[in-house]
Length: 423
Image (cartoon, rainbow, N blue to C red; front, top):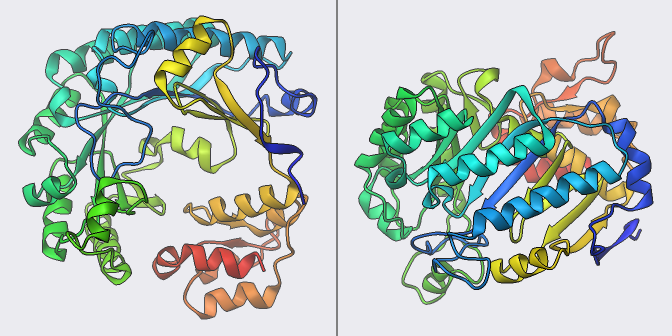
């Protein structure tokens, strides 16, 4: 079935939302509204990275590090105008996330200025979560203090590994000792700390991954993200694997490392709430990432950034110079947009809900347009095969169809569970 809007339909020059989205917006008034701010600059291009990032300090008119904050603010002003013209109920931002790239390659004063303008345009909920990613080498006490004073509440540090040889394979240039210094700097000013780790780097042993986990746990962060390395086509690492300079990814190795991750983080009081994410309690979960998993709305600002509002998805032009040129001309930077059909939205709902600790509410899923009914025999088969927990799936007066909550084995095979349930 084709999408309601064709894949890649052009975005109007004024960014106006289509009629079916305007009609749906009043019903979204109670859903969170997030803001993602993309900072595309990096000091070094890591060999495994396929994100929309650039190492040059000046990428053309409006796309230098110095001019980029003003360019971003132009898009924020456009976003506020588009949402105001839509007639939708005003919603303050519940989450803001600065990602990249390396956001902290910009001065902390500039990151705070962008946040301040976002607050002026949209409002910021009293308990809003405001995060910036940071390279451990770029977060010192002075920068952390400026961020905290500017309204940031959380920092996500790109630790990746505690083992120098693994960091070199990943082309990461930070000094491992600076991770603890950055954590201390954040804590001194009251910022919550999340650490990003990557497992499965070619050549990384299980013992080395244990070292990274134990080092991260010793820093007592509120949150840890542990992602399995994917060798993306077109990256420098993919070329090295193809030439035989690095071994290819081993799924069994990834599984062993995930099992160790769950064991060590669980013993340290960090519980999974999404397949790759662990937190000390509900308050320290990444609310911004939950927006993505729970079908909330967010505006993505910056080159290549993706947005979602009331079922409409769109994405900006990728190159910072083209992005800046459009905004300088008063043109929306969106490159294409789509509205998924009912079948695709139901499948996405199934896949995303299975990844979180609360699991998939079977009755709520089956009520969605386009959803495939979930047969009792298939659901019970997941329990029999050790992929889903028994107790949550048992019917109750409040939930007559129960929930599918993945076991540890089920998390390892989450994609296979999705395929079984989607028919």
